[in-house]
Length: 116
Image (cartoon, rainbow, N blue to C red; front, side, top):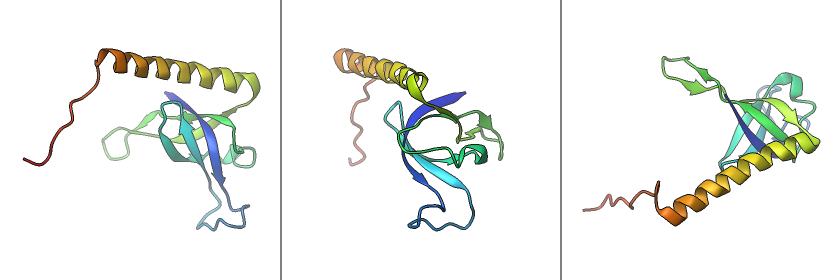
């Protein structure tokens, strides 16, 4: 299972403003569903990834402590029309779903009060 998003920033030892305990590279990614997260970049892509790249994030479940957690690593960079089209498909679907929820109220939760 994979998730798609757009790179906002890259955190690498090559940046003079970044210091790390290891040589790994991370990227801040704005996902198609408006979530923004920092994700590990696979070593083979670390030298190639850059701001504005469209990327695939591996969300395959892992079971390190018995509970499933997503792997969360960038495994592909989708450039050019391939990346633009893929991200656009997801964003279009997401906007359509948000509009349907707004118009129908289905999927909207009532505000829960924690103060009684």
